[in-house]
Amino acid sequence: MKNSPDYFLQLIQKSKKGRLKVYIGMIAGVGKSYRMLQEAHDLLKAGVDIRIGFIETHGREETEALIEGIPLIPLREVFYKGKVLREMDLEAILRLKPSIVIVDELAHTNIPGSLHAKRWEDVEVLIDAGIHVITAFNVQHLESLNDKVKQLSGIEVTERIPDTFLRKADEVVSIDLPADDLIKRLKEGKIYKEEKIQQALSNFFQAKKILQLRELALLQVAKNLESKINFIQQQQSSIIERFMACVSTEEVLAKKVIRKTARLANNYHAEWFVVYVKTPKESTEKINVRTETKLLQNLKLASTLGANVYIYESNSKGANPIQEIHYQTIHQGTRVISSEHKTIADVLFEAAKNHQATNIVIGKPKQSIWRNISGQNHFHNLVQLISPTDIDLIVVT
Image (tube, one colour):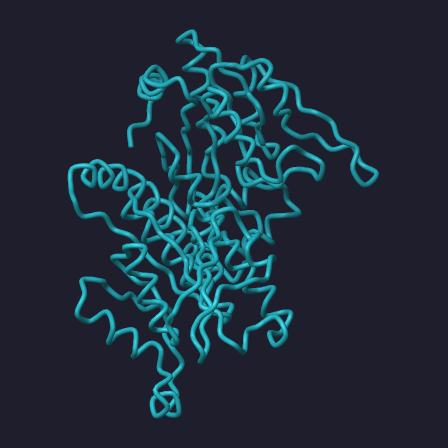
């Protein structure tokens, strides 16, 4: 998308609600903070009231030099575990109410006792208050890409941002640098201090990994623009995509199905929801505590990514509504629904019809000769049910 202070100013003038501009990078050190500060100077010259809410320079001289001349909102000091820590002062920003505020390190986890657990939640409050925000993060922190990032790097990124946040952005700009230049900057000590250089070279700072992360970052920018175009087209079309994710207690595959569906829905600017069918062996009396915990975590993940969650119960005597209160309180978007159908495939098919799904996303089933003989091949039965319809089936391996 366009990258200029003038374009962002045009967006600001069109709305009373705060606008959001996001600089997205493939890795640390590409220059996100530097570019935000450059833009701040340009906006100051244009007479805009812009201030720094939080900036992280990592000791980089070029970045620190750009802070001079830009008004800073003092950080709040918090005494935590015997140390004095400094955190962005959300209440001060709301009180001062600048036209635009710079908020760096979007994926940051706030100090316990803060108003919100994550910094991106602070940004949502600022936008709702009518304050425009320029922020930045690296692509590996995006929730739906967590499994992909772990696969290519072997690293579990713990600080993550929901895709629903990025979809709110009015402008997304990719900050890019060649892999060789990044590695050179790292070795010269321009990104991290000497004690962290070797660790960085062992993790993300490898040419192949940088190129893969670069592709993910550029793809997110393209998808953001495409989703806005698709949204306009959908307003003019009678065809609206809706994705239904089918999950089970199989932890890893369920997580992949959820993230895959979130990415698809984001691409199409479409609504999506999750359906979990509880079987008799997964009743409160029988289900393993660890399995139940992981299931609840996955359903909460789906809610965080923007899905409504629907829970059904299936058994040989017909389906009954689930009564356990802890299932009902996973998220305000969760719904517990009764069904008269007996099989898992029947329940899934009925859910797809009731919620007008155009696509069903499901994990690849484990093959079992006994399941085929006994008629308990739920995947095969679901395929048979949707064959006469216009519903598409997407299988995640």
